[in-house]
Amino acid sequence: MDTAGIARTVEALWDDEIVAQLTEYIRIPNQSPLFDPQWAEHGYMDAAVKLMETWARGKLPALPGASLEVVRLPGRTPLIYIDVPAANGGRDDDCVILYGHLDKQPEMTGWADGLGPWTPVRKGDKLFGRGGADDGYAIFGSLAALLSLQEQKVPRSRCVVMIEACEESGSYDLPFYVDHLAARIGKPSLVICLDSGCGNYDQLWLTTSLRGLAGGNLRVQVLNEGVHSGDASGVVASSFRILRQILSRLEDEATGRIKPEAFYVAIPKQRAEQAQQVAKTLGTAVFDKFPFIEGMRPVTDDLGELVLNRTWRPQLAVTGVDGLPPLASAGNVLRPQTAVKVSLRLPPTLDGAKAATALKRLLETDPPYGAKVTLETEKAASGWNAPALSPWLEQAVADASQAYFKAPPAYMGEGGTIPFMGMLGAKFPQAQFLITGVLGPHSNAHGPNEFLHLPTGKRVSMVVADVLARHAQARA
Image (cartoon, rainbow, N blue to C red; front, side, top):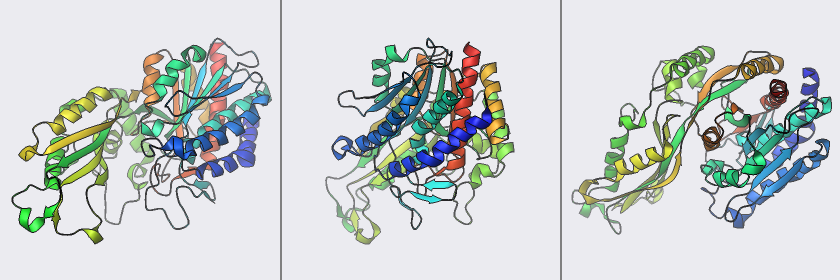
């Protein structure tokens, strides 16, 4: 395999076509169903699917025997399914899954002047806008890798590209598609996921674990309607105060530590050692990638502990609030209720469904003053801990990182959740996993000023091609 030829083909595809496709994709406000319950009526999801489908179909003639179907189960978000037969002597009785998603997070506030979630802006190596890096590039990068191998007639096994439209809502539609397509998929020996992060843009980063997630809408109601605060305060307990009290059952507000031991697991020795190595590799980039205000500091000075906090320990975030009027219209009223959206990240090996049940019981039981306290669970996803890499894959990623990044690979857990990984890990325990991505420093997925670092997108596509070729050699 000519690595320089792989690089040339991938680079040309990105420059000539993929960047333009991603620019148009960013314009589409195809928010995940959790954030746009009327996604089907609005048609944005279908527009994103159509954009990707049209481009991909134009590339299939260069991949003999390849087929594409937009699979639509009743009442569920669509899924793009591309089946590419083995080529150049590779195995058709084997399978590699290449996974990504096309649904997006909502707008979020705080975008810089001239930038916006649905306004693609190219600034040097960065393409700003929602979804390009998380994870609209996946289908384009996957096909670029396959096309580069085909151009050189390099052997590879059969590949299945799956692009879902529900990941940002917890992938609740995906199990139905995996079951529906099980016979067609077969038993993959390798899963490649392009929906993860990277600690820097200087080397290939492999994700070793992903946290789970439990969360939903926590609501505290004390009255049927608001009343004069001068009349009621001291008689009726504030729903906000009760909410604080309820949340303190879960989190120590002074330290951020989650209190119940049921939400913890023993951290594997190898993962703890890898966290220390990541801290050594990144240094203060572990935390200074975040846009801290002046004078703000991280929760601890211990870099290794910061890495473990975001990868193997439970952590709470309150991501939304309801029942509080804007400051300009906040009168002297004791409000009837307060609600917040809670997001509890879970250790990779903790059962997400059991954790969600435990969270609901913890927050709802014995409410202060007899208030009405409810947790409407929206997400209950288990995390994922990667199996040990086979020698061939460990060597393949080491060589690919050197070939295309000119640096050795790095291994790190991620704090986010990709439910598909846990699902596939359970269904296909014999499979190897290559989880990587382009979400590096300041790329700010889900937040304002999200961007795709284009050189990293290209290099990751090259790495995928290289690994597919090595996979075919190992399975020959």
